Image (tube, rainbow, N blue to C red; front, side, top):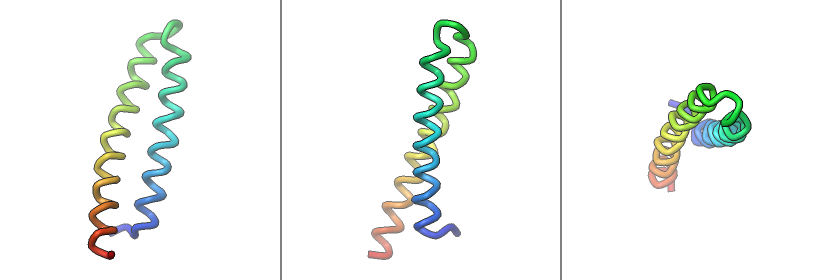
Length: 65
């Protein structure tokens, strides 16, 4: 099982890439709407993972605290 530090690092990476995908999606919206939609879908999946990861981190902090 990953450590709390690894989980927190993973959450930061998720959030970084979500922001990058959203920014690129906005840039491509007019020129390539299909790619923009794909990037939006990928960002949505990463967002779902980030929520689960946040919950797991909160649970782990509660158990250790």
